[in-house]
Every structure is written in C-alpha cells, then in structure tokens.
Image (cartoon, rainbow, N blue to C red; front, side, top):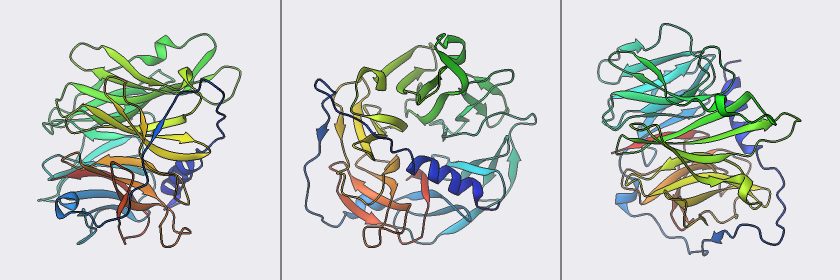
Length: 330
C-alpha cells in the first residue's frame, strides 16, 4: 500500500487518453512548429520545485540538484504545494491538511474535522495566507473549490456546483478539480465536469472564479467541440493572462494554451513523446513550464519531470526518477 495512491493517480492520468474523432467543423487547434532543440538559458531553470515521488514529497532545485525529502511516503499522502516564499509545504493525508515549516520542521494540522474527497489540485494564495484545493463538503456528492486559512484554520467552500447539476447528469463523482490560484489573489482556475446519469465519460470545462464577487466564467468547454477531450490541470500564468492545461487529442494527452478570456487556443507540445504529457507547472517568470512525461532516452521510464518551452521544445529532463512537479517558486 505504500506507493499505491501515487501510482493509482499516475495511471489514472496517463490512462486518460480516450479516442477522439475529428468530424468536419471540429475546433481548430493551432499546432506549435517543430523547433530544433537547444539547451535552456540559465534564467529558465532557477528557483525551487516541489516534487511528489513514489517515496514521498521532495524539495529540489529546478535543475534537480540537492534533493531533500520533506514528507516521507505514507498511506493516504497525496498532493502537496510549496508556499510562494518557499518556506512552507502544505500536503494532504486521508482527509486532513498539514503545513510544515521548512525552517523549523514544525508541522501544523489545519483541520480537526475530516474533509471529504481527494484533491486533484492544491495551491497557496499569493500572500501565503490560504490554501486552495478541491474537496467534497459535508452532505455533498460533488467536489467543490475550497480554501483553508493557514493561520485561523478557517475552512470555506467557495463554489456550489453540485447544486446546479442538470437532470441528465449525476453529481456523484463529479464536480471541480482545483487548478491554480492567480497571482492577483482574486481569481482561481479549475476544471469541472459531471458524469451523464445514463453512464459514460464526463465532458469538462475550464472555469475561472472571482473570489470577491463569486462570478464564474467558462473559458473552454469540451462540449462545444470534438477535437480535445479529458481536459484538466489548468494553471494560470504568473501574469494571469494565459492558461496551460492538459487534454487528449488524437489518443494522446498533450499540453495546450489558451488566453484567460477564452481566445487563442493552441497546442503547445508536439505529439512526439512515447506517452502523454500531463501536470503543467509554470516557471515563476512564465517563460517555460515543467510537465510529466516519458524519458526521451528511455521511453520505458514514465513520469519524468520535463522542462518545456512555450513552443513545445524539450529543454531538460531531470535525472531524479518518476515524479510530479507540484510547485515552482523563485
């Protein structure tokens, strides 16, 4: 059981590549040109990254040097996030959220009552006062976007998506999947979808929530096109103007980019990898991103943290084994 949750979550995402047909009139996705590979500039691989690996949560440099174990693997450990100032790590174990101070080693438990659901995403607010994630609130069936105040330990449910489920959909097992918190502290992005009551795959959309007003804006909806399916892991850029997300196209999971107003959809990664590409994480300056894919030199090695340019070029693959980059800070 020690590594079961990590590999289950890994296989769930990599196995997401369902078939997709392309009839006339399907959404046009602009592919990136195939560039020649060049080494990354030094500015592209600075800072610290938090990586979830089968043996636990690790902190390392963006070049994969000086890896430090923060949270050893234990049953129920899943997902983690590094604060923007790089001093604290939040993580989830079996319905409870914890924060570890990396300077003192002190660990705080944020919630005393069980919180339902398993978070697909987790992120700190820009001021490092709150943590956002998806959860299943008490007496609910669908996942919602939730937050916890790290100091006051106040738990809050920000959305009520399950209350708006249509008669031909089921709330059970559906709902929101947290993506990231915008640097303005006001906006959150997430993916949301519900399963048909008659059975079958859910069609998801990408939505941005304004925390101050409660307004939710949809910027991409699978149901309006047929080219891209199984979307998820949306990440707002540091300037809040654009979004990276994963989606299935031609039976392979790739990384896409879309503007925060829903315009400018394009395919970023190039379809030239042995397995799907998932879990994009922006660099602090928004110039490059890490994602999770197979090794270029040995395709049998799945889940290698890989640095990409915004043209889909592979810049670097970390030689640290399989792992999901959860956060990247200065």
